[in-house]
Amino acid sequence: MNLPSEKARHFPATVRNRDAIAAVLTRVLPDRGTVLEIGSGSGEHAHHFSELFPHLTWQPSDPDQLNLDSIRAWVDAAGRPNLRPPLSINASDVILPLDSADAVMCVNVIHISPWDATEGLMRNAALVLPPEGLLYLYGPYRIAGVHTAPSNESFDRSLRERNETWGVRDLEDVISEADKNGLSFIERIEMPANNQSVIFRKSVSSV
Image (cartoon, rainbow, N blue to C red; front, side, top):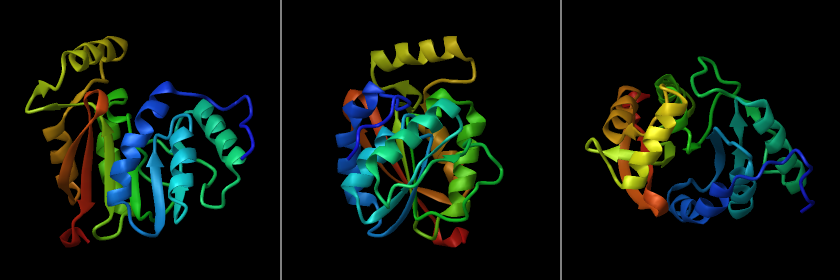
């Protein structure tokens, strides 16, 4: 692998959480197909997971130009056929620039975006996924209206001070939005640093 260009961004949280996320993905990802990552950020997750899962094609995406430039730098450095150049996608887009994906993942996005991004994420995941297709979410959530740790409560306040449309979401609201779009809640997995992995699958009946 070549070293990425100066446009490559480095997010410390990615290095901290990638192995824990990979342990879950190893169990739930399909054997073959394309994984669409919504909100890829720096591109470090896509770079790392495309190496760990060579049997899967990784499609990163992001709405931010600096992030898109960073993702391209990581893609170019990797030089892997299963790591595609990034797409410009906002989770709330009505029309996505691809027709299908075998799995969709979204890491640390829902709490730093308006609620309509979550609505769009669920709507679009339902459109591109096949029956039983996977939607994987990672991040902090309130459970039954309660923060899982004092640090998450402080984090929530800081998010809302930065942008009143942001904030740690109630998991039940996220599950309800998924259900509206034919995405069935399967499992919640407690993760390090008071985060959660949340697994959904597209219902066969929604096809």
